[in-house]
Length: 127
Image (cartoon, rainbow, N blue to C red):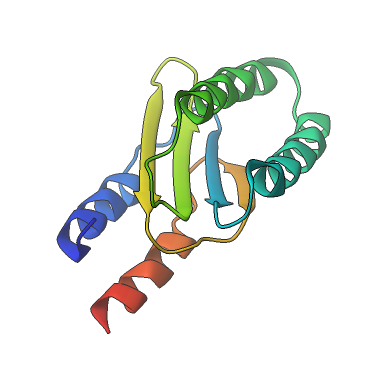
């Protein structure tokens, strides 16, 4: 992915309208085996589930299902970093970005996507 394409995706994420449904921002480091990122993902999801209830929890589970389905579908050869943004609810959203540079294992849930780690990639790509 080139810098212009990454900037386009960041703009889309930064301007995504808020809804009542949470957005999952999921960054995964693919450098090690699947068990490396899988453990981090499963542990964080376990903690997040405890903090969500009702309709928010249902929307979270729908978004998480989309993420899990894409992980099962496979990852491009040579990818060492993966960023996935998913939202369930009445205005669903999904974006998967694969990179040839590693990203940290980091998962968050909020009303807007967390694009911090994508911003750090633009700095790396710009230099």
